[in-house]
Image (cartoon, rainbow, N blue to C red; front, side):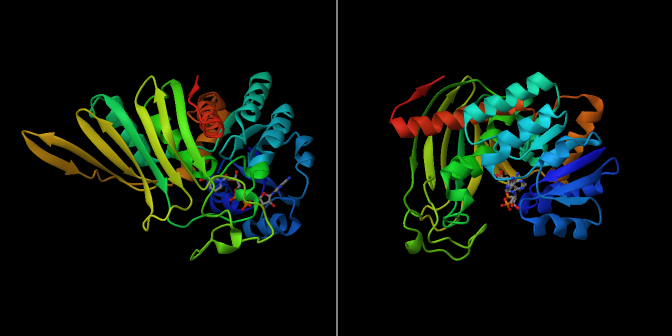
Length: 349
Ligand SMILES: NC(=O)c1ccc[n+]([C@@H]2O[C@H](COP(=O)([O-])OP(=O)(O)OC[C@H]3O[C@@H](n4cnc5c(N)ncnc54)[C@H](O)[C@@H]3O)[C@@H](O)[C@H]2O)c1
């Protein structure tokens, strides 16, 4: 299978390209980036493919079966739709798009073309997350009535003034960048419950004066003092669903001293705290005693699992849990969170 990488930045180099390189069924035919040096650096580093700067060159190449879309969020919809229409299968990085409307257009293109469209909700291929799903599905937690989600950092606004903090490019701030992963984990582990209503608030406080924002290091940095910062650096709220109630508190920056990156699944028989990207702890009681334990297991690389599953599903026709039809609900919830915050009222589905 021949694939193309569109956008040769951070996630392409740290996850997609190395995973494709390890997959024996795959050959990377194109590395595309509007910054020519990034595309040619990938050709030199990985010793294969052609460097190009315009993804439309890929559309006419019948040899290319599939693409990874690893560009900033504002280009996800356009590039994905163009590739689907050209008959390519697509793995598009998260979030699906900047808005629910754009994500619906992507979904419509998938339905029209019948090609695969998966979104990079990589945690659905994570061993901890899949084990927690088994605990919940098998009833070990009893009724999971409440899930608390914390994706909070003391100081972690990325590239202040750049793509990540510009609404026109990113679609939002910490919710659309980090929250998308956390909400997706909850939806997946709890069986994709139907959302009922959302009430939320979003704040643009700590980074709004770019020159005054204090930090130790900045990923996707350095700050652009003449840049734009018009997204939320923290967000909080409640989502009622047909399953558990979900409450959340997320922040790129929040004056909390220590980062708090975890999800608490609270059941009436047991609870689980997932340490994001790591392992988890189970809390329960046995014979009148309080008990907790940390399951031990081998952690495989979730990006490799995601890419291998994408390649595999093209070959077998299997529908993955990262299909746009499943993932789009998180985009709808995020839209409702933003709408609720903007209008100071609860949004009902
Ligand atoms: N799954 C994850 O955990 C994860 C982690 C990081 C980023 N991401 C997602 O991946 C995407 C990219 O993030 P990143 O951190 O790699 O950003 P990045 O800025 O490092 O890389 C994006 C690249 O896209 C290129 N690009 C821009 N316009 C283009 C175009 N028209 N054609 C081809 N290339 C173009 C840029 O020049 C840049 O090299 C974002 O949507 C982000 O949310 C996902």
